[in-house]
Each structure stands twice: as C-alpha cells, then as structure tokens.
Image (cartoon, rainbow, N blue to C red; front, side):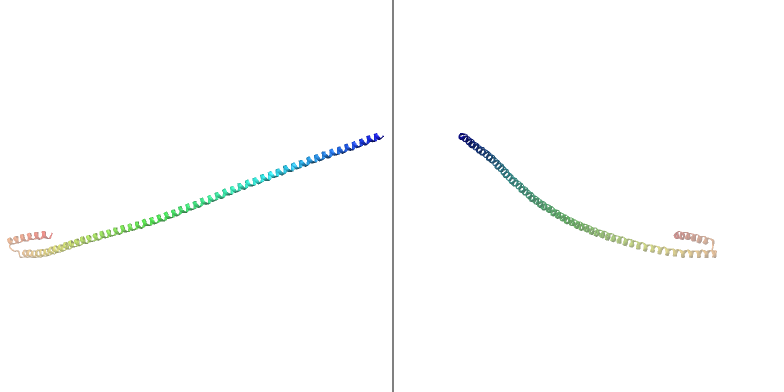
Length: 221
C-alpha cells in the first residue's frame, strides 16, 4: 500500500508535473504566440510607420517638387511677363517713334506744300503782273499807234476835205462863171436873133455861139 501510495503520489506528482509542464508549455506557446503577435504588430507598426514615413517623405518630396515647379512656373511667368512688358514697352517706343516720325513727315510735307503753293502763287502773280504790264504796254502802244494813225487819217481827211472844198469851190465858181457866160450868150443869141442882123454876121455869131455852147456843155458835164 505504501508503494501504491508512493506510486500514486509519484503518478500524481508526475501528473502535476506534466500538467505544470503542459501549462508551462502552453503558457510558453501562448507567450510565444503573443510575442509573435506582438512582434507582428510591431512589425506591422514599423512597416506602417515606415510607409507613413515614406509617404510623408514622398509627400514632402512631391510638395517640394510641386513647389519647385510652381516657383519655376512663377519665375517663368514673371520672366515672360517682364519680357512681354519689355517687348510692349519697346513696341510702344517704336510706335511712338514711328508716329512722331510720321507726324514730323506730315508737318514737313505740309510746310513743303505750303512753300510750293506760296512760290506757285508768287510765280503766278509775277507772271500775271508781267502779262498785265506787257498787255498794258501793248495796249498803250496800240493806242498810241491808233492815235497816230487816227491823227494821220484825220490830217489826211482834213487835207482831202480842204482840197475837196477848195476844188468844189473852184468848180462852183467856174460853173457860176460858165453859167453867167451861158446866160450872156443866150441873151446875146436871142438879141441877135431878134435883131435879124445880116446873114453872114448872124451865121458867124451863131457858129461862135454854138461852139461856145459846146465848150460850156463839155465843161458842165
């Protein structure tokens, strides 16, 4: 019985030891599993933290990259803006210079035309004055010539008139004389006829009278 008790005690002890061992093993397994789980958690945490760190680094890098791009874009925009402003300013100056040059050319053209117009008017006025003076001189010369011719014609006419009047007077006087002679001859002829003078004398007288009549008749014609 004591042996049996001893055996039972041994068995009990063994069982207890085994149970303790099993418990210990199970605890060790649980602890190991827990440790593995914890390690896995830590690993996952480290990986997550690493990913988060990489993400933050990537984010920071991307942010820096975008900020750099934005700065470059802004710098490029400002550079282009400065170039555009400079170009526009140069174009403005160029157009201003062109406008000023064009305005100056127009003013010079206006002055040139005004000068030409003034010279043309002066030249035309001078030509008109010269033509007027020449025309006045020609008219004056023609007038003097006409006056000379009119005076000459008047003198010739007066001379002709005087000669004509003188000739008319002479003719009139001659006709008056011839008329008186004719009247005397008529009276004489009538008287001779009335007296019935001698035939010879009468014939001679008549012949003379006839001849005188013929002479007087020719003169009157």
